[in-house]
Length: 222
Ligand code: C5P
Image 1 (spheres, helix red, strand yellow):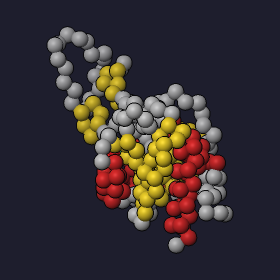
Image 2: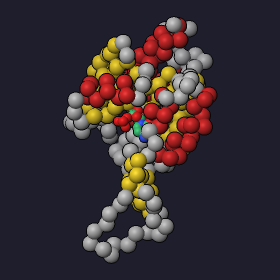
Image 3: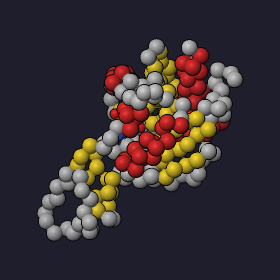
Image 4: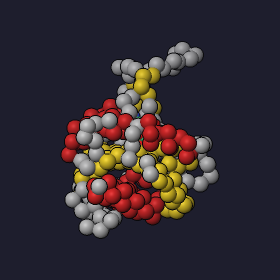
């Protein structure tokens, strides 16, 4: 196997947004389309990996992967990942997981009677941190979508979450990020970094997959 082959490597990858129920008809969500994650899942599969995708709700069709597990909430994504993580070598967290969920979703549809409404939110588990803290842990790759100081925050997360790699991008601007066809990434690992310039999400996914494979191979050669 060459430096960028993932032949025989078992990948678990999260993608898309999560939806956190407010009542039976409403949820809190986010702008993740899942496109970067699905493209990366396919690029990793193209390198020979057996990819299991845990996906929040997206409008995307079934990608060329071994298996797709559909979930809706962060808690469901957490459960799906934890039940599969022992059987993976490489964990890639591209999902835009909600940091908070409504403490107790209403049993019935909330009516607009009062002038204001307060929702009490509680923290969701950080799936990526939990996976990275396992012993043994798979090789872990995280994402950081930031509106400013991208490198600072990404390096902080690499260290704090004890990741093997992190791919960071600037969101909320004119180009790249959520709901766009193209993106640019700065990728960091403990010993180095590489900038992948603005390009289509499919090309970017192929370049990132090759870089992940290179770092993964280097780790396992040691
Ligand atoms: O700390 P932050 O949420 O910015 O970290 C982003 C990274 O952590 C992404 O890789 C994301 O998929 C992952 N994450 C997660 N579970 C959460 C929150 C984030 O796996 N609850």
